[in-house]
Length: 299
Image (cartoon, rainbow, N blue to C red; front, top):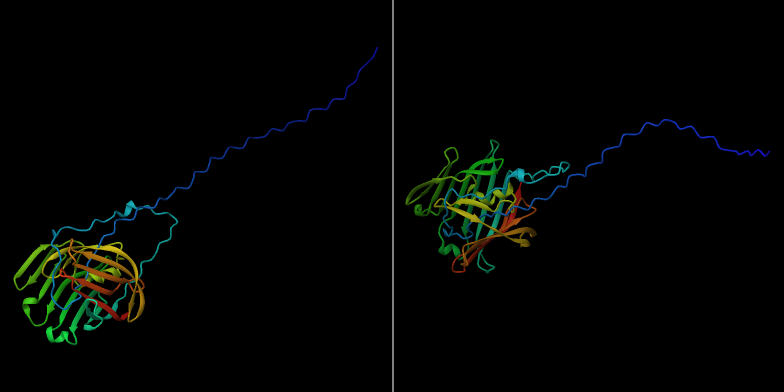
């Protein structure tokens, strides 16, 4: 009788293992889409000459630039807030005034802006003819604007346009923000129209860019004391302007009047609060006047 024996491995005891709860899959981080840049609105330019030339277009006084709703622009939660540049409370500027492409100076322009402690502001522009031009142009062109500085920028209350001692060439505008009325005064009488929320005067509008960068707001309702007009500017590009202060970087914006040669151009200093360092006014007949900054002081 044959007995067979076999060696067999004993089974390893299995421990009870509590299954680990499966982790939920991580949700992908939300993608923040960039909002399309709002269509640039556009704005106006001051007269560069010493004569009272009014070529702006009338539009309904209630017409205003369309605003892009703030909640329509998605913002990433971790995006840091960017502080807006602080506008100066004092601006003192001088310009040389020339005609067309002539290098000779026919006049000078002095502009002074002051913000008061109570939040009000005062603006004054004086244009004086010099040289041979003084023989043909008598008197000074003085423009003044006063009002309050708000969170949206300048809010004019009174504007005056006075050319020499001839009262027939004087124009004024009073802004009644409480009642929403704009009253304009000329030698021909008074005219009252509804006051748009974005209204400026012929002098205050160019300083408004200290508070609202030009490519964000390029449409304004502007009064010269005679009528209320809608200004629409286009962006021509970034350019270097040779001035008495050296070469200055600027944004070049233009307001055209239909198909004619008439237009107003502004060169706004990028490194100097978007102040106008060059202003050119071209008339319907092709004649132009140009202001070029020679001195600039801010505080």
